[in-house]
Amino acid sequence: MDLKILRYFLTVAQTKNITKAAELLHITQPTLSRQLILLEESLKVKLFVKEKRTIGLTDEGKLLKIRAREILDLADKTVQEILDENSVVSGEIAVGCVESFGAQEIYQQMGEFSSKFPNVVFNLFTASSEELLDKMEHGTIDICLLLEPVDTTNFNVIRLSHYEEWGILVRNDDTLAKQNSISVKELSQKTLILPMKKAAINEIENWFGKNKYKLNVAARYNVVNSVVYSADNNMGYPIVINCPIIDRCKDMKFLPIEPIKRTQSVVLWKKNRNLNSASSLFVKTLFRHYNPVLY
Image (cartoon, rainbow, N blue to C red):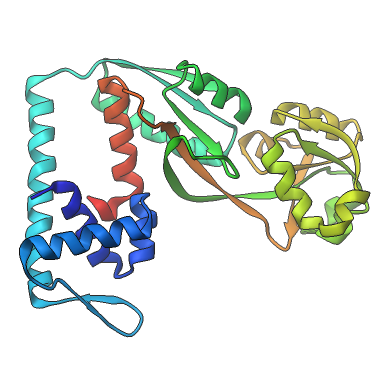
């Protein structure tokens, strides 16, 4: 029995929802449905039963859920035992991260991985999304953490549970610093500093609707450091995603935008690219951490 299909089945059994399961598995809903039908046909039993708003299990499905969990646990344990006893994991892993709180989570995972596999060396890159994607395209980087929106067509994706928040950066002596947030309407009347990333610009312009044509843009930026300097020198109000660099600016205040605007952190690696054993193992480690329902 194919272990991948068992993981598909177990994910649906635990989420009780085809759409949600497909999202977790990073496959399309029709593909998942087709695989489940083939599983039922191969076993010659009905595994699922439709309930009011969820998908339940038949008695045969409940038994398979128990056995699938046991089989997958044994398979994972066997692989880990072989890895621990018969090989030393070594090599280099090139990881690129944009400045974000999500990056802190990845660094924590790297720290735990390094403790377990001390012969692995991480090569770390911090840059703009465009630079990191270019390095990944040319093979300089193996794994990348970016912030949506980003075109993931050519990449495998792990979405972090953490969401980053959009806002503006203001000086503490600015009158806006007395507010707890700023509305999109207020923002449309200010001099702004916007990111260069095209996908981010498109998202921001959508907030303003027709007013996007009237925005007063003083500058554009590609990295957060330049945003701090420009805001400190009264060039305008940068629209930014909150991150550790901004959080450490004692003379600045991050002002969230209302209605709340959030974006998700994503870990990417190229499809159809053969990662070395260390990078491949680190990807699997991240996948297990952020998708525990599948393991």
